[in-house]
Length: 375
Ligand SMILES: [Zn+2]
Image (cartoon, rainbow, N blue to C red):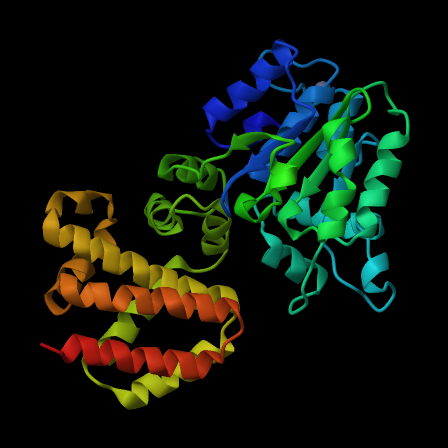
């Protein structure tokens, strides 16, 4: 991964380049960014830049031996720690990152904007909790005690330190504060609020923002077979989350939108038979699809509200959606929107925590139907 592989985010990239230029690279840095932001990608690009033999003012060369190894995530001075779970072969405590490097590399290379759910699915840990076990603090200290292989920076990239066992976190406080020479910790967090303050206080925080719509579009334009209209729709739905945008680009974005519209029609007309049928289908679909339906709904509600107060803001909405939003606004006034929105958010929350999808969907349909009909 190089800076040029990440769409936009110039300010952050410049900050990182400047730090190296001024020889002010902090030895412990926290790349804190929301889900779907380039926090991991940026840390990888920075690692590549740091150890490139022919870096330019703006980026790593991509061709030197160090860059070639970094591109495959096999550079001997780039160490990874990430959350794992037990397997038939390894007990919880023994399931440390070094046992899963092959899977990890293939995950990061295919989904550099993936989150912990993607990682669990990639490995086959779907319903298991993944953490960074206590033993990893020992592994971190041991691998950093080695001399750097190529005279370059030794980099310890910890992905999702918020999932560290408390003892593991406490075990690295000392080395985090005083790492060996030319050693750099890159902590990549999706939820920095959950980190121990003792960890946070030892790092320099770099806040990575979500992508802009334009950056999402730029990234999607590089994919084949997406029309401009579809790219616009996806950027609109993804709200700066490139992970969501990628999932949408792989699936059928119209499908989610159409599904939401059909669902609302069933609610407005009290079509119980239709609702039940849809609840069955809903249950069979994957968690990601279930969540994307609620996300699409939350978005339509918000845009309907904006449209009711200030029609010109609808210009961001693709033409294909504007008509629906106008009609939707005839049924849902601001008071009703204020009632439905938290219900959708709540449903999203419960789906994430493995609620019964069918019951949840039917309940929600009835509530929405009731709100739509109320005066
Ligand atoms: Zn290079």
